[in-house]
Structure formats: structure tokens, C-alpha cells
Image (cartoon, rainbow, N blue to C red):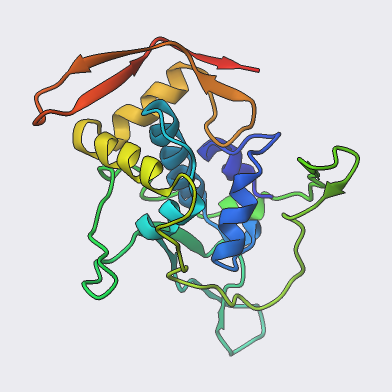
Amino acid sequence: MFRDFFVAGLRFPLDPVVPEILARYKVKIHQLTPNAIVQLSKFFWVVKTFVGPISIDAFCLLYELHPQGRKVRFEDEDEVFSAQSECCTFVPRRPNRTQKIERLELSYCQKNRWDDDWAQFWFYAKVGFFSAENPARVSYPLASKVQLVEHISQADFRRSSAGFRDCLDAFTAAAGVISGRDLIEQFVCADVWPLSVGWFVGPLAKVRVRVGLLFRPVHQGCTRR
């Protein structure tokens, strides 16, 4: 784990959907940048606060994994190597007419530049996830070995999967009425970290906004279980 992941919004216990999303792209958590954590947090927050379920397939439709191609040099070595960690982030998926994919994104909001030495501050963490079917069983999906990055930039998705349409509708509604900066301010002020487990949106009210006939849910607060 890198220290700045927690600056970007990572918290434990982690929502078990997060490692499932990473698995779709064949990427490990140590291969992400802090801005990847920001993108995941934005997605979880807008979908839940706009009363939608988190759908891995919807996320894969909306985002692709972008390797940043960071180069690494070692003392007394002439060869230049490609970084195998802290090198991937999520960006809006490119349009594809064949797959009927249109570009849909929240307004841009992330830190353009982290401290040059942010990757020097890291530690090991053993993070277990309890099985929903058998609470006595614990798995460690975030565990990883040092190996070459062999990610998938554009993960497959199924439009027919459970929750896909409701999740996409929630994200679409949010993208039309809220900026990336505003939604980050929302969860910071609410003292809720979207990637953590055990929080849910409080009572909702609907108000008309000046975006066609859209109705935007306005939550009265968030609660932790």
C-alpha cells in the first residue's frame, strides 16, 4: 500500500466490489496511482447517492485502465525500465460505435501532480475479506506478487447483468447535474469515504433541476452501519 492512497480516499474495511473491479482489468492495487483511487471513489459516491447499485459491468463500460508509461532508472545501469507499480489509472472509456459505447464522464477533478517521491512511502498490509456465503472463510484478493504488468485496458462487460442499467442510469443522471469537484467536497464534508464498506445514504428527497425532466436525489446525510 502507498501512503498517498489514503490521502486519495482509500479506507478499510474496503468494499468487496473494489478487488472485483481490479480483477476485471487484471491489475493489482500496488500498480495503481492515487488518482485511480480518486476515480473509483467518485464512481462509488455518485452511484450510491443517486440511488443506484454498484455494477462492475457498468464501471467497465464507463472506464478503461490507462498505463502511464513511467520509466525507471537505476544507479550504475544504462538500461531504462518500465515501471511495474504505481503506474495505472482509470480514465473515461473511449467511444466505440461497434460496441455502442458513448463517452460519458463526470467533469474532470483530480490532482494533476503528486509529490515526486510519493511512491517512496509504502507499507505491507494484510487485508482479509469475509465470504458472504460462509463468514468463517476469509480470502485475500488484494494480495499480489511482484510481476510484470499485464493489464487489460478495456475490460469486457455485460449489459444484461444485474444492476447494470440502474447503475448506468444513476451515473448518467449525476454526470448531467454535478461536477467532479462538488461531489468530492460532498463526501469529504459528510466524512464518508466511498470505497469503505458499511455506509449508506440517508433519507432522500427529489427536487426538479434545470436539466430537461431529470430529478436529482438530494440526500439528507449518510449513515454508517
